Length: 491
Length: 95
Image (cartoon, rainbow over all chains, first blue to last red; front, side):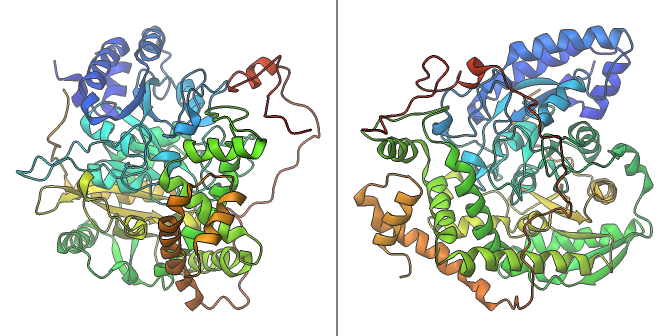
């Protein structure tokens, strides 16, 4: 009997359907791994009872031959998704004790497809961070370490708990959310696959809002095939989200078989940034060669406004966040710190409930939206955002997908946090443009750097063309044959 | 410095976030660093460019103006730090 934790989501699904394994034994194996992985601090809340109960129900369906797309698959859920009657914190002190009386649409879709919940995963506070260092519940440790160095590294962020848990096998797959790279960057740092769908593909209803015009949920998995399967279950129209798009959900898994012969792969020259490590430069060249070998045609393209994506993002996202986070007032849910007047209560609650990075962003957002500054900052950033979207539109007249590095560096040490906030923001230089333009992207583990740490390559596609993104990602995965394992892995 | 201590105190009040006096100076430095960095957007020519307000080209759907949800005040107030008789409470706002 093979180790249950070795199975990919696709393999587990097939073994469950064939009754070779039971959902209960799979759930038990993962519940044990969740416990063993506690030193990594991946989970804020563990829900083994939820998983066991759902596994028993899954076994009944499987035995009756009525298994659904994810029947019996044990998942970790980023703690940004509201889960009915289960503590949901967004990694923040200000949501202390919050148990939503409703279920987010994406998690509802997953449970309706037969998946089970192992627990709620740690994350940067309100998804603001690129290293999982801003969580009220403490940093998450990356299961990967540099060769011959015991130092604890960050898993990336904001979906750091999700990335570390998938890499360490403390869940079979996880949900993440991506506002500026929060799925793809931690996936790259942790040697797993992370897919950010097109804006509007997955419902945002019931996901704690950070920047509403940028936030998008997606799967974090071990393989591209697993991402295709999981996206199929997460995606779909939802009348409760006014930005959810009403178009059919394709069978993403079927797209993988089509190969990339004749596909035009764009290589944007502006993604060659100063000071990029040689290992990343080499991996990118290698990726281009792999795509060529697989029959794709390489086209050099230009995205001239790339360098302005991050600064535009750091106006738009904080502006939206300052508005979204106005709801945390100590009145309706979460933390309340008493004060003599209503204003004092608000100020004391928010002063104590929000962490430093969240405060910085809310203050920046408030500043750029305040009288006299709105046009100079916010309106300007929205116009630059149009320019960035136009760049992509022009590029996609010459190519079908873009191939870029996923991150400008490999994972860094928990104690190597840059003191300048802007330095931390630069982690998302390759991922942010797709959020601004609303486009889908995938990060695929493609190699190791000279210190033995995983690096990812990114494929970006046209809006609602996740199928081609997955096809190209699958081709990369096949060529890279990435089999390296983190130092800490369970099972 | 565009963002000085006084501006930060004002913005913090607008955002209803208590910032201790001792933290204003360092916070002003951090925020000013971010604002100075984003000001490079000034280099981009946006003459005649429309602002992008949505990531997806769609018009909002219409729906019937009807009550579709509700009727469970106990659930709505279940998470409130100090709910009383299905009401939220605040410090006194009327003298």
